[in-house]
Each structure stands twice: as C-alpha cells, then as structure tokens.
Picture 1 (cartoon, rainbow over the protein chains, first blue to last red):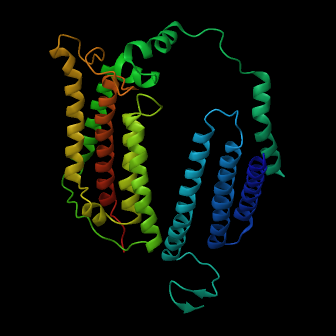
Picture 2: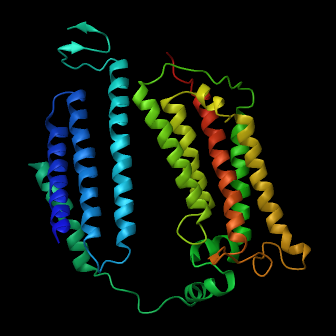
Length: 114
Length: 235
C-alpha cells in the first residue's frame, strides 16, 4: 500500500512540475531561460510521474499485466532521462551558434566576459 | 479577456459534444467485420486482425501499394541522379549529444525490429517497423554527420540495394504458393503457422520482414538524398 501512495505523490509532483514549466514557458524572458522551463517539464513532468506510475502499478495486485506496465514505465522514464538533457544541450548549442541573444554573465562557449 | 473566453469555450466543447451525442457501443457489428474477427485466428493463424487483412485477405492490394511506394521513391531518386553524395563531415554537436544520439539510434533499431517481427501478434508490422527504423539514420545525420553514417556502412547504394532485395522478396513470397498449385499471395496452408508454440501467422511474418527492410531502406535513401540536396549544413 505504501508504494501506491509514493507513486501517487510522485504523479502529483509531476503535475505540479508540468504546471510550473508551462508558466515558465509563458513568462520567462528569453530562449535560454525558457529552455530551463522545458527541461523542468520533461524531467520533472514526465520522468517523475512515470516512475510514480510504475510504483503504483506494482502495488495493484488486481491490475492485469502490472509488471509489463511497471517495466514499460521504468524504461520510458530512463530513456527520457537520457534523452532530455541531450536534447536541451543540442537546442542551446544550436541557438548559441545561430546567435540567439541571452543576457549571460559569462559565455563559456565563446570563453569571454560580457 | 478574449483568450480567457476562447479557452473556456475550448474546454466546454468536448463536454457539450459528449452530452449531445453520447457515445455508445454499436448494437451490431458489420457482418464482414465479424467474419474477419472470428476467422483470422483459425484461417490465417494470426491473432492480429489488421495484419491478417493487410497481408492475407487483401494481400494483393498491399503488394500493389508497396510497388507504388517503391516507384515513388525510385522516381525521387531518379530526379536527383546527377547528385554526387559526398558524405561530408560537418561541425558536430558537443560530445554528450553525440553519445546519447548513438545510444538512442541503437534503441530505435531494436524497437523497429520488434515492431516488425511481432507484427503478426501485436499492433505493428513491416511498414511501421520500417518507418521507425529510418528514424535512426535521420537522427544520426542531424546530430552527428553523414560521414559517420558511411563509417558504419550505411550508404545510398546499399540502401537502394536492400530496398530492391526487400521488394524482390515480397514478389517471390507472393509467387511461392503458385508453384505448389495454390493462388498468388495465398497464405495457409503453404507457410508454417507455428514455431515453438508461437504463432507465426504463416506468410505474414515473412512479408513483414521484407516490407520492414524495403521501407526502412527506402526512407533511409530518401533521407540521405535530402540531407545533401538541401545543402547539408553550411559551417
């Protein structure tokens, strides 16, 4: 029973992360800050609730195919956890390359103080 | 304010539509549909009715469709026949992006193969598996480079060759029952229906494999051409 509650809590945390990410997407000023919100949405809003789903499914003996659901959720969470940072790195790199302005204190890619 | 009203309307529409037209299960199934649902497991030896219809009940249709798709891609390649593929290596993304892309590409190939090889048991099949397979080289082209694709042996000539092999395989499979006195594209009883307790769906498995190769290689060839025809990345 405890796993079910932990899973439900994780799902609620995920929903909150998605909400915060959505607000951040709307309200942040420039591309790089919005990228931060997007990553909160993918890691906090997809990986965390997926792990919650897996835990909750494991704790429901009457659910048919619960091990398949739990396994698929865990693996999906793992893949998103792997891919999301790479995707945002690629986006940030490409944006920097094509000259999207952000108000950096220090630009590591160019290696100079701004 | 306008946005808020628009948002409220957008949220309310599904509820209103569901209230006005409540969805209920149809009282009867069309007799042809009932035939497919009941007959698929016993006569095609596959529980996946969609694949049974595609490759058995209306198999000739699907072969024709595959041929049309083949001709479309061949036409596209013919337009670009003057283009010399040079497999350039361009400025690459940072290391984590490249590593994750390669890992993901392997995962995509695995999922594609499982979609195609399980096509007679679970939703999926040759075309779906092949389309999924072609995403892997596309991802590598975008995130790493064309040069790295050639390094692992994926070239335009090989893609076209695999595509032709796939279509030839499908045609040969369609003709096999004729040599035993059956009809073209006939499935049972000319193909093995079971192996180690797993249903193979007779010819469905083999059609799926060849379609998987043909579609995957075809899309890969198109992506290779487009990556160069679009000018590549100018660095």
